[in-house]
Image (cartoon, rainbow, N blue to C red):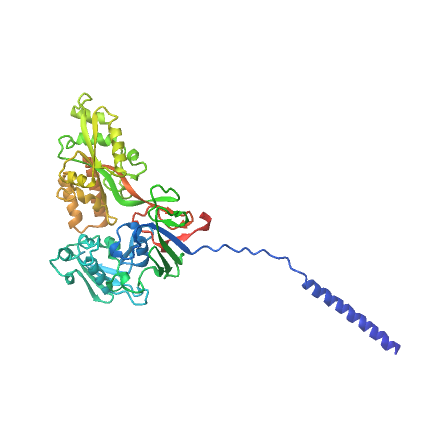
Length: 513
């Protein structure tokens, strides 16, 4: 019995020992672990807010009048061609295209092009949309664009001598569109991204349906008179929603990511984007004095585009916008006005009288004053200012009743030739009377002949250099478009001259906020 009790005692001690060890182990496992700090990243907002100073929130492509109003329309609708983030022309609804003569074009639409109600975008949508654009009953301010583009019978239809059914656009089937032009247009693709050519569902006004049906990157989820909220149709868009709001001068624009057309007095977060517009003065080649090249050279030698354009735009030295002429190069004249006048025998005892004609509004007065002050520094000039209303300016220019007159030129798409055509001696836009058969011949080659890209570029270069040699104009600056953009909004190319900022190309970078 004693032996048994002794064994039992040893067994109990062993169990107690095991229990203590187990408790020790369990106790160790149950001790609180050192806590690791988990960094929770701040969620980047996925809504983009865009403001527009305007009287009406326009959603119909056919009634857009300025680039700011076009912003929501560009997000909602896509045409045959569109712009990339740098302003280059790329395919939109068009999957591919072909032409043998640049006069008759065939476009095949993408299989995956859909309206927001799920229906496919068809060739008939384009046919009906372009016919509505030209329909006199609609009275679209953009209707003449089809005439400008050269669409067959567009001019006659607009004048009422032919029916809409004769318009040179046809649906060969649901995905095949044929466009017929009056004459070859090798720049057609560049023209097809214009806002006027955006299709609408069945060619109807967007407001004709209870739900506005779109084919763009975003669709409408709510709308009232002054505000519209869009939702992304594409997974890859950084901004899942975009809110457009009309604002007035009484409202503070600071809370918006983008303000399309900020007031001139507003200075916060302003960026300046180049426009396809130039500002210059024309010489009257019929004037006894300005018909002399040396006098035009003297004026060019004195007037600095950099000084005159300061605060107004990008200094311009050629007939082309600076953004187009960057590869051509420009050599500032080293001769003075006095040297040119000396060649003509003009002396300070008998100075040259120069009248500067300009429209009496906005920036034009200040620019004219800068030119006058510059020329007035020489005793060889006697300068007078001739401010006139806009309508009278046009009349004086048309009648060649001027010496130096304020002028400008804007292009609907990016093509240098559009800035050169006005210098053809027979052009209706040539009001200065400039004429050079060499320039005429090269412009006609550009218009009529099938050229390689290199041949075309060489002709453009030669014409631009000839205009500069002839002192055909007094270039001053390239216009810029002011936009207010919050520092954390990324994706806008500052060299993009298309004036199009798609919401799909933007994203928010919190590090820049």
